[in-house]
Image (cartoon, rainbow, N blue to C red):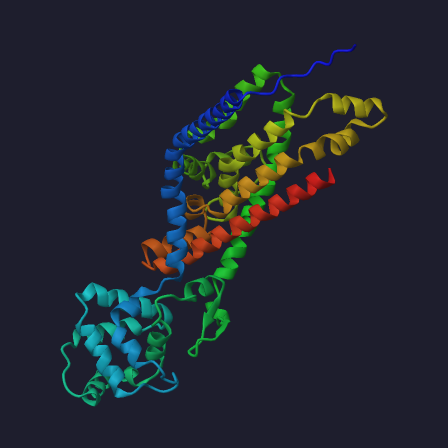
Length: 420
């Protein structure tokens, strides 16, 4: 007779023990996740306050148009339904003077005048003249007659068109102007007159300078990174310190040093003349050449480091194997080694290009009037023109360009991975 062995059924207490163990493990895992989240929370808050909040505020200010809406609410209502062809009715003049009379002080009138002056040159004098004429009493027709007597332009439509166009609190005008577009008196989008188009050319100039700097950095950094990757670790680490020296020096100091080196009597020109290469000093300052030289010097480490990190991961045996199979050393280098460094090339080029399009100090100090990049005009609108809307619109344009470049890089990287 053959005995059959069977495992005894689990008791209820054993099932409860397993359930309690699972709950304890789940609680421990939850505590671990919350602990990790608590450790990263300060960093998340820091990024939120220093990165995301300023970006949201920048994008909001690029479409915000509060000056006219806050200062002239009654005037905007009076112009509602106006055909925007001839000067409006007399009640609009009375509403304008009433709104100006309710402004707290002259700084509010100045902000209103500056905003309208960006759309209509000469609007500042009209608004400030009307503000200084307060109080102005009488019927709407009498107020209209007094304003026209002070300045005949009050009888024309352009200023009123500017007020009506900017009456809404939110506007696309700044973003349109950043790409050389505008709204006409009827609110239709059109291209700016050719003599007023500026930012399209400035954006192309910014991309051109950044591309030239990126290409030169790549041509200089690739052989240097390859040489560092082939050296023993001790020698490579010592030489890498020299590569990182620019990180420890202020940009202003480096730019000032280049001003000394590149001037007519500077070391570069004197050295070239001493060698007989040139007969007279080259113009290396306050032009595109000086800007490119200084930017390449500053940004070169940002190209070397990604290339070096990728090249160190490429086994040297690949090249030796290709040569042993009959390939020439040059062909093996370009067919076997270079394709494996494409991730470093892409990362370094993207990093240098993105940093380049946002440069301000170097072109401002070393370049001429035709060498200023988009960041220069952002600073100008912020510090000189006091036009935050236009400055934020140009900043949004740079941000968009950066995101597009990053998106293209990611798409190309994914395509390469899928092909690989």
